Amino acid sequence: MKISKNFYSGFCFFNESELFSEYLITNDFTISGFSYGAIKAFEEALNSKERVDRLQLFSPAFFQNFDEKFKRAQLHYFKKDENIYVENFLKNVIYPKEIDISKYFKIGTAQELEELLFYEWSEEKLQKLVDKGTIIEVYLGENDKIIDSLKVKEFFKNYATTYYIKNKGHLL
Image (spheres, rainbow, N blue to C red):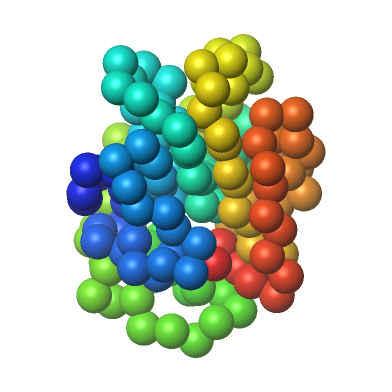
């Protein structure tokens, strides 16, 4: 969900951009997104006819290193009891921090979760964006309990500057 001109929210989130204010660049030529929103930000930057100088991806939803069984299980548990699934998910998002994120919470949909889990980041698309002159920045938390930060860092290394934030989780 796009919450402002240039920031896309994560799965089960809205208006959370202030949580990234330490790193977030806000101007007309930067597009940013957190988690699921990183996918939306990436696709907008890639397909935009407008000038995009910088793309900031905060803990991008990267699950292509997980098998189909894992992804289907996640969808199953969400559909079985979305409240329990989301409660668990949100605990993992803030780990290792103890912050109140309730004012940024919105229930996600099965469709959003499925898109997040099955999205395939493409090196070809990343190269196309780099060739357009867009600087890509990827911000990852060292203690992320949702994505594998090391795999994400490895995947993006040829296309982006990766900021590996020590002692931080999914929600930098």
